[in-house]
Length: 322
Image (cartoon, rainbow, N blue to C red; front, side, top):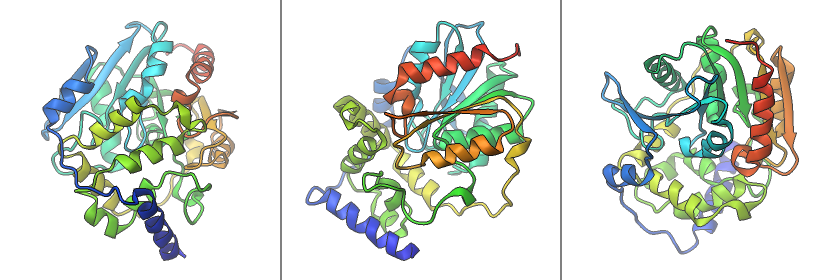
């Protein structure tokens, strides 16, 4: 069965690329960094040689809200929330290793444990000892894993179409014929063997449009940003290393120990991680509330930014002081 889905993914990928498969080299990191950094961009140099891109924005004395992006995304995905919530809250975003302007790191460790350690390093560097932690997709998975590892640091969680336990995944590809193809292809060793030199733009465009319920919201600038960041020197190698890494064999944790107040936000039309996963989070976490957006897909903070930010604001207003 697994092999059959791999063949289907390969065929879909070839159909998508149909005649536009070309070679495309990496872009100099300095060029991409200049294009996608902002006045708020800062870089944390770590002892292993990694350089972590982060932004510390919003109200300096506000409640700290740390936000983590999803797989193959970057901190730019949170810009709508930064604009909408920054007058009230201190909003910290960062590019996880292998992503954005952090890019490839020495040792090529892109495990969840490495991501958790990166979040710890940035928040410690900023002197933020206790905060609200949120994340989308893969970043949502890092969020609850960080809370398990450092419960005293996390006052509350915001899970946005987050990855859950491995056992919650249904066999086969994501639901819906319009789901992102790139993730299925990257799971295939043969594709990772050739992807280092292929032009990823067709897959990026398809993946973004499939991640939105309303694909018309995916404009050329968004596709170009994802494209440029994916071609930043070293990033493709990091992506292939991440998808080729073996899954952890550790026993699954008991999420019921996470007693922090948790807001769960989900797009009803998420074809990558279905709303049923949000319902599972709501059932297992002791203090959780689930909101499902009927006109959103996998990235509601970009697709319905005003409504999702308003829900986050109401949630944060109801928290006890840190």
